[in-house]
Image (cartoon, rainbow, N blue to C red; front, side, top):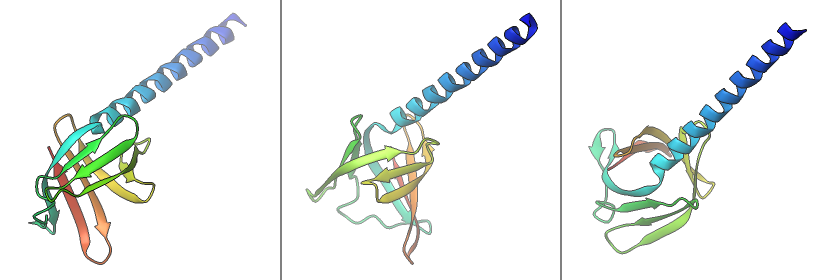
Length: 125
């Protein structure tokens, strides 16, 4: 009986450790997104397709789940954002979903299939 209790205790500790680690990873991934990102490139088939207004635009993701995109033509877009639990999908306004290709402290790369146009990639620093 003592052996079963000991094994059960070990299993509970292992599961708890796994859950804590998973939560910390999710929080870390989300924290990587929270900041002001400056658009470096917007590419389609390897060609930079950013408009004059989009060049050097700033995408500001805030910790309260809101965002603001400021372009260089003084147009602002605001809304809400969320990062999927696996940190592979960034969704704006519960509508637009971007695949997260890279997310580090200094780089954010997202991409999305745009209708019949093709795969568009946004790179930020």
